[in-house]
Image (cartoon, rainbow, N blue to C red):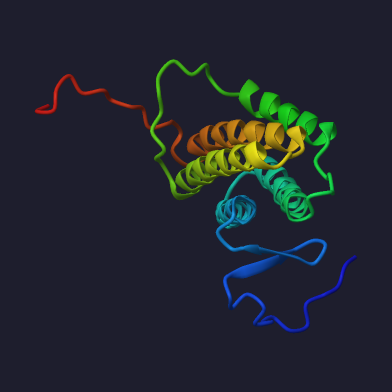
Length: 185
């Protein structure tokens, strides 16, 4: 295990830079830091989902994902390090298949609404998509592990499916989109 933080503030970031592996300083609004920050935000949102009364199977899955996201954040902070590998993606796909198997076929669009856990999971899904966009942007300038990008892409799909599971757990059904024929309806 690495060093533990004994002092929280260092003052080294007061000039608008932050450190990544290798004693490298980068500006805080760089593509890399934006991607790392969005992964951190996603992890925090998953923590909010976990704060609700949710099924144990979902809790276990999301706990694993939170650890994965720390691995992914570490990979992004250490450009020469690769943490995400095929077994991460295989596990996400397996979870996706397992949760989706119990759900009815989706025939209509659903709204990102419902109970608190459901809505929080939808918010996590949308932040996950932003994290993916950030990583793709970074990858245009600096080579990233393609499996890390694949992982975050699958994760947004899994969060969508988990939101569907949570909707049934909280409300018994999903909130369906009601298209309007015109703006005056």
